[in-house]
Image 1 (cartoon, one colour):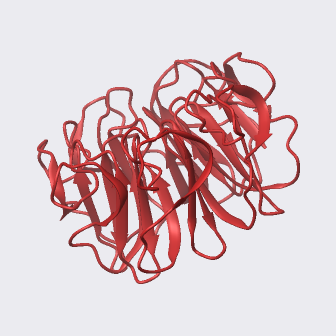
Image 2: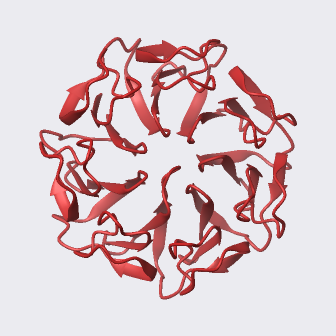
Length: 351
């Protein structure tokens, strides 16, 4: 497993706090890594034995090891087993267990752990109140999302911009139903907005929209789920926990559409102009099979299991050996055979 980009908190897991413009190996992992996820300044790995390890920023307990001490090498999340998936927010983390229940740890000022409190936790707590089995989890900046087996979506935590989608601006420390979303197949959370892909390939978005990240042609916040314009055939979406833009993977041809903030070229259309409607990412080397979004950069897994990235690169988060922003995709150096990827605020991870 490798990491690159910002390393202020040790989020690359190489035992240092030195930024890296090309990938370096994560050291000290306790076993084989199946999938990875990234938060604002921390990283997560799901191991083959169903346990989870984390590293990087731990100011709110987001590493889950019972402390608030940051770590430049992996530490084990206490009391977790049988984990099927992990997700990282700005300063909190989620784990989906094999039985369809959810555990959360880290920052909780807005209720983003979903345990009915607003107290941070440096160890996993149970997120409650789901009427059906959870099959996917996602984190925004200070909010969390769950996709249920019946296709409904629930959300909890920060709701300042309507990112919980319940029609209010009230934070919630327990899950609430996102109104108007049914038959969803994928979810994603941004800094203050949320996304859902429906079974028919349409995309709904809600929450903050100051940069056009809802893709509805406006810059008006919306606490109700509304359709992203001019977008069909989508199979997956991505948005970073620190980001104000959105990405969508088109299933038929593996192309990518993007919208919202483009100040660093993170939409990949060759410009730095924000867009309130989807635009095509240009010059991808081949079809894309998976996406991840950081604060201001984007990361794509190509059909040949190599990586490309675009957008902000001040910390080397594009992994191309430079610190120069790019408005179109560049290759991440030396990465091949990749099966899982993740983008943090300003770093990248690959397994």
